[in-house]
Amino acid sequence: MKEETEALYKEIKRCRLCESKLPAGVNPVVTMDDCSKILIVGQAPGAKVHLSGIPWDDQSGRELRDWLGVTEDVFYDSKKFAIIPMGFCYPGKGKNGDLPPCVECAPLWHERVLAQLQNIELTLLIGQYAQSYYLRGRKHKTLTDTVKNYQSYLPTYFPLPHPSPRNFIWLSKNQWFKKEVVPRLQEVVGRVLY
Image (tube, rainbow, N blue to C red; front, side, top):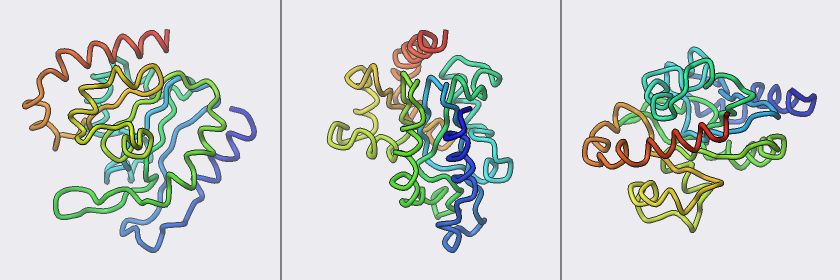
């Protein structure tokens, strides 16, 4: 990793901007290397990831790796995948799951991270927060329609639903996703990585 990239990584890990509003405290979770080929933009770390400090170190991560068709070793190779969430720290629990990601993180860090990641060939936008931020006016009214129209965002972006167990109902209602989108996702990811 180049010095500038490593310095930025350390700066993010030391961030305390939202400390007063994070019930579990701060623990920014990020993985990056200036050689990374695929960028994963997720929502925010969950409680388990907050404790481990390892992105996607939970059931959602296992499902995501299955969708991508990659092993843990490949997924956690920062020369292959950079991982940045919309909110870098666990936001805490709400009535219906985790709270939304802190809004301060993406404007503060994403542009600086992207400036270091000059080898990114594909950005996976996981969930509505990432899609709203990166696709802005180009996203459809619903996440379902945005994901259905993934081809219109290629080769730069590939929008995906969140692989959380909470979304298994969505997956059972939208079986086209695993039949049509996942094979194409694996093909695109494989072409970028290998």
